[in-house]
Length: 255
Image 1 (tube, rainbow, N blue to C red):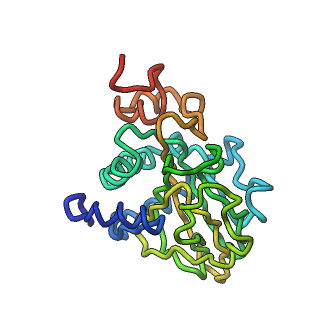
Image 2: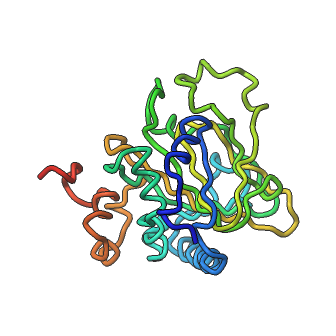
Image 3: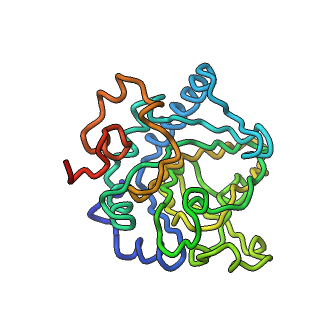
């Protein structure tokens, strides 16, 4: 599998800066991907048992887009992905090594799922102007990511728009699929304008894990302090406690 030593970090960061996205293949083996898919479905069932919604009207057009929230509390395997050295290497290079984890959830596009609203993730957490990257996504591809099964649709270069008023009215006509083989991580600047794709296959699920990272001064989307159970918190390293905002001090180099 891909090691951090084999990654051309300068090239990856360059793609993020120029295009707004990049793909690193081979981060997970087929066996690891298969096991995570099984764990994800088991976690989805547990999340529903706990009363967490798998379908959010207004976010997704229909229930064929299965959401799984609070992944870190559902299974230790997801917490391990957040600490994965490849993800940490890239996020540290792009956002700075004091980044925090804003959210971590899954989106399983089942056959018949349709696209959500066109948006950028940074526009949801920070006001204009969006002149610098304050956030980014690391997307764990647990299946091949392609147009037919609902690959994320994005507009390359749209991360350079600092204000929504700068975008042409026809921008959605420029959407293209972000494709990647199973076991990859797909990286996306938080300012990239995108939407989920429609799964038009008959029998292919498209399971993706979305790890959303941000600068430490941006309010996190998910309140890990409230959401994580006591035993889960106890098992966290000091580094992950900082990343998840579990302590009273945000600046880990401070007090």
